[in-house]
Length: 535
Image (cartoon, rainbow, N blue to C red; front, side, top):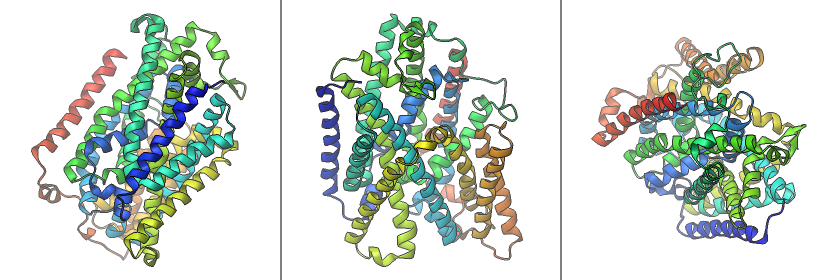
């Protein structure tokens, strides 16, 4: 497709602005604390915006509208997944985040060494690195393929432009550049999504006419009829609520790519505030791009020629390209460039935080523990941090050239891979936080058992929704880890790193924090009735 010179100018101006921002930030960095947690001096609103921006990845912006509009069994059922977010934020705010912040750690896996032992820390950190770099390569592959199709650039140059700019501003600015660039990217992304929504409404005359042109069956968001336990149905209410709850607790409370930014907060109250904000503002953003899917589906039903313009993949239209194809066809020169900037922004907001967190875990969990002489000064620490960012970014870019043959399978299965690990990882942390007798050996065996248990369900019990794996893997990890530790000759007493009512009381939290807890519960109830009444 043809992209005008002016559109290219808009795109490259945006990329240049990111690099200038990162260079400016790099001048005030002195050590690893600045590079990885911004000196713990970022306000909650900025961090919350960055966290939400990461969730609005390219796969979400392209995949969610395609799921709503065209996917078999799709529609607005995706919205019920978001009901779990406020409850998950409540759990993380009360039980996980206070302990991590009080320890003043950079890598969340450091908690596991303090509570258990070094091998538990290295096992979880290594697992995180393996899964995240692979998922990042898939993200680079998928977005570069989209850029290639809609701009005419070769796949090589699409990867190089997207990846190199992200790596450079990440290397220069660290987590602070990541947060500030995410804020800019979020503003552009929301602007473009709103612009698309208004265009679609204008096409039909009003919102009600748009909705009436969309399949009634796909307008249903809440599905209570089936439970995903043995019927092969994934996107139903109970697995999405319960499985989604444990998935989000694991992701926001135990995953370095998220917790690292949460630890950038000035104090614990600010950290809990940003989690509260994520629990509140995430749903409106997801609702927006799902409603774009409704509009695209209605547009396709009233304009049959539209689907014939989509590139073919395995003999069927590539529905993931519906949104960018619509933008290029319907927007004037200049706004096309802005829309492609939004596409780049969605990809970069996912890549930058992951690359930085991979560097952080490598430095904190492996180099600091195994080769501390490499970082025996603040200057060396900062230099090694930047080298690690270059290495991990380069690894992700190189891997993106080799996932092509399996990418179609991986993109479908990427959520399954996450659910394969999320439950066991969460179970390992819960063993440390809520039990006193569990030891490191038991925690590691529990983790491995939970992953193997989920693999069994994946291979032999495909009729069980993959969302339930977040619960199954966690329960297997908890049970196996605790029983093995109980029977073991090695005993621990929790090392004072357990959650308790006494610990909670000792925090001296302001009344405002308890108000946030209450508001999250109210928000969950409000969202449920909103979906019940309207969808």
